[in-house]
Length: 228
Ligand SMILES: Nc1ncnc2c1ncn2[C@@H]1O[C@H](COP(=O)(O)OP(=O)(O)O)[C@@H](O)[C@H]1O
Ligand SMILES: [Mg+2]
Image (cartoon, rainbow, N blue to C red; front, side, top):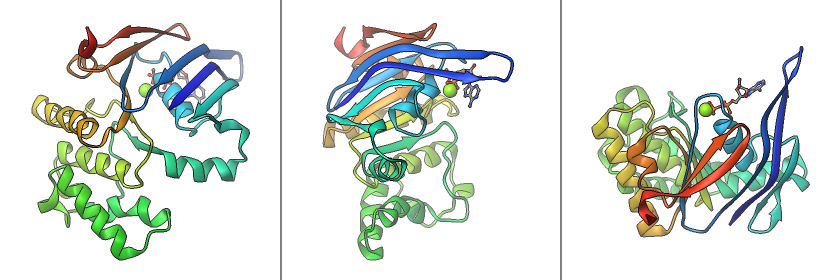
C-alpha cells in the first residue's frame, strides 16, 4: 500500500543544515495500524508529512500502491493527496465557523460530490464516530474528544486509502483517548481502514500491529502488542 525508500530530509537553518531523516525505509500494508514513536524533535511529524505528500523529501521515494508520489507535478500530487490520504492532527484543525456536519462534508465537496450526497455521507460518518447528536454543533461547542472524533470522521470522508494521524490523543484525557483508540480499531475491523499514527501514548502503540521507532534519523521496527 505505502512504501518509503531511503527517505532523507534536511532543513537549512541558515547557519547549518539539520539532517532530520537519514535514510528511512518503511512499508505499510493494507489494513495495518502502524505506530511511529520516538522522542520529541526526532522527525516523526516530518516523516508523516512526507508519507502524506504534504512535504517533499530531500531525496528518496514514496510509492502509494506502486505510484511514485513525488514524480507527479504539484497539482497532480495535491489531487492525489485529496483522494488518497486523510489527516488527523493533535489539534483537530476543524474550521470553527462550520458545524461538525459541514466540516465532515468539506472533503467530499472538494472531491466534487454534490451537496446532498456529501451531507448524507457526512451523516453516516458522524454516526460511525457516535456524533450524530452533535452534527449541528460548531467545534467550540464540542469536547476535546468529540472534536477529535469529528476530525476522524472528516479524515475518512473522501474514503482515503490511509489515515495519517499525528498524536491524535495527545491532548485528550484518559476516557476520551480510550474512546478514540476504540474508534480507530473499530474502523480497521469494520472497513479495513489503514492507519499510520504518531504517538507517545503506550495505550495506543501497545495495540498497534507494528511499532516503528525513529532514532537519529533512522527507523527500526518491532512488532506491536497486537502481534506479540
Ligand atoms: N520547516 C522546518 N524548518 C527547519 N527545521 C524544521 C522544520 N520542520 C521541522 N524542523 C526540525 O526538524 C526536527 C524534527 O521535527 P518534527 O518532525 O516536528 O519532530 P517530531 O514530530 O518528532 O517532534 C526538529 O528539530 C525541528 O525543529
Ligand atoms: Mg511532531
